[in-house]
Length: 304
Image 1 (cartoon, rainbow, N blue to C red):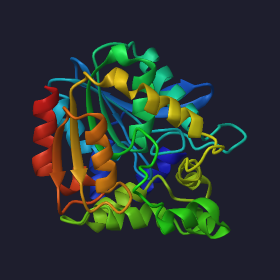
Image 2: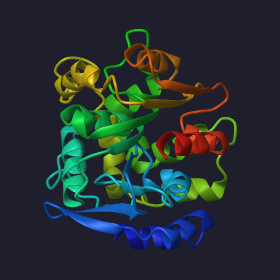
Image 3: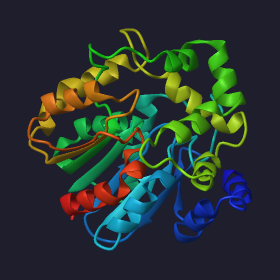
Image 4: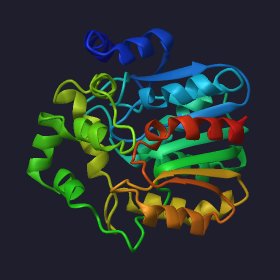
């Protein structure tokens, strides 16, 4: 089982061992597939949606900061973290499935109003798709190095992602070498590089070719042009963003992210001109790690 694998690797990672001890979590049966999630604290719900190639571990410090005053819910997407990792025959690894999973989990927990969403990477598109379906349920939005719309015209698709998305070499690198998980953990922080201990915690659930399926499918699902399988869904979300114009938004951004760079930040501020923006010139993609001392208190003040 994935949890057993993480526990084995935790012998090498004190950060992971501490996380597993402090955040045992729970499981949700999603049509016969086990979806793991954290549900901690009480109060107004704060739902944190991770991206690729992270998992709920990414939000560990923010969850601890908010759980004394809020109900914090942090799912591991199917195929990620401590959730089950089915093959393609059992699960359709698409954006639409991710949004449906989030909706089903929140419905099962009775969370249907006054929801604050905290979103990072692919979690932005997943969370904003949920918000676009149910704008009346959303009370606040926190977005970090992510998108809720198509790639801005000024942004070129990074060659490294093209290799992972569209070439046989990508499967070998992502699923064979675990290069996407380990590489992102190394370059994701610019100001405060992650320790080896924490990098091992990020990589722990992704310990085999089979257990890296979601990492690869996320990259393959990036919509670049009409006809790509989630392109129309992203268009629909993008078109409904004005329904969220009055929702208070905090944008936390690492400006040294080679994917979600300043062009994406400019698009967020263009679409949400009233958003509060905290831009960190020396931070990378994992801005919540790189700028935790500044960003976590700012998010807590914004939400609580």
